[in-house]
Image (tube, rainbow, N blue to C red):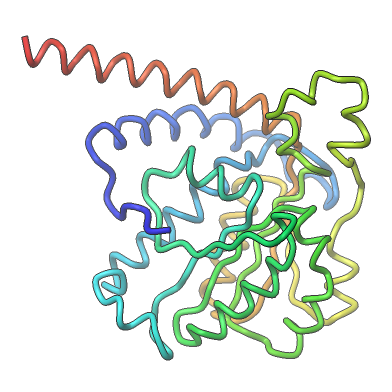
Length: 262
C-alpha cells in the first residue's frame, strides 16, 4: 500500500476537520487504571497519530524518496497494519501516511505479529511499527517468544477494544445472536503475557499516555509493546460521527468548487 505522503487540498480540509472532531474527545479525563476500557483514546486518533509521526519522520530523513534504502538494512521505518479495523482506520481517517505494509491470512487476522517481525528484521536500521487489534494479537500469541528471542526494532501497538469491533459495522450487529457469537467480548489484557516472555510493555488509556509511550518506543529504537485500551461500541459511534464530519466537508468543498467554476 502506498499512501500519499502529502494530502491534496481537499484531503487537507478533511484532515483538519477530523483533527478538530477527535481532539476534544481524547484529551479529557485522568488516566484510568490499566485494563479499563474508556473512550478517552479513540482508535481513529491513534491511527492518525501513528501515521502523522511516521510521515514526519520520513519527510525529515528523506527515506520515502529513496525506495532502494528500504531494502537490505535501509533506514526506512515501516508501518505494518493488521487486517480488520486497523487497516480500515488508515483507509478512512489517514490522509497522510508512511509506506504501509499489510497482509491477509486465511482467516484475515492470522499471523500478523509474525509477519510484522519479518518486516522489522528486514529493516534493522529503520524498524517497524505494527498496528494490530486485540483479537488478531490473541490469534498470534505464539509470536511473542519469537519476538523476545529476535528482539527486532519493532513497536507493536495493540488496539484493545475488548473483542471483535469490526462486526459492529455489519448488519449482524442488529441481531440477537450478535453478542457473544460475533463480537466475541473478552476481558483479556497483554501485560501478564508480555511480562512472562520478558517483553517491554506499556499501557495507554488516554491520548497523552499513548503519545508519551509511542514517542519513547520510537526513540528507543528497540522492541516494545504498547496496549491501547479503547471501547468497540464507542469506536463505532465515533466512526458514525466522523462520517458526518466528512459529509459536511465534502459539501463545503463541492460548494466552493461550484462557486469558483461559476
